[in-house]
Amino acid sequence: MNQLPEIIRDIERVAPDVVEKAGTFQAAILADVAGRRGTMHGRVAPVHQDMKVAGPAFTVEVRPGDNLMIHAAIALAQPGDVLVIDGKGDLTAALMGTLMLSACKKRGLAGVIVDAAIRDKLEILDLDFPVFSAGFNPAGPTKYVPGRINHPVSAGGTVVNPGDLVVGDADGVVVIERAKAPGLMALADRKVADEAARIDAISRGDTASKWLPAALRAAGVLKEGEAL
Image (cartoon, rainbow, N blue to C red):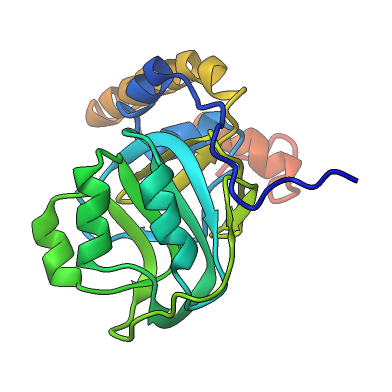
């Protein structure tokens, strides 16, 4: 039986024009049009609320507390890629810090998402490079244990395949399958327009949610003909 190599170098990435368009949307908008799924657990958050990232996933799986394969991934990733690291949510040791993240920025990566701890928070803030993590720990990692690059991973409880579209902002991270991403851009445009119209209506005093009475009746909260 043929077995995939631990390191897969060539992947099919979401198209650059889709990445550029996706980067204009909030992660929340994309999550909504994607069926309210594909979002990572809230533990995976930006180091600073103004950080935003969009790009194809370059996936890495490591054993908790070991960053050997992350070093390999930095050497292999292409400009515009987003490193998505499945660190099992472990917070006992930092998988990355200023040195590795500086290398990522220098190589032109779009950002890094780590479902594990990182360190050097203040220096990362000065680095001006999008980084999302599950937390912080001053302890350093080991560099001994094999892992995998560009295999499907689970980060923040969400399946991430290499080349998938990844968008992160102050609200968190959403992952959209590569094949589905192009078709969602028009839906996201429409969602933005609909929400802008609703905000305008609210500003004019129309705060009523027209769908609410029917939803309350369907849930058995209101009887037929009854109103709030």
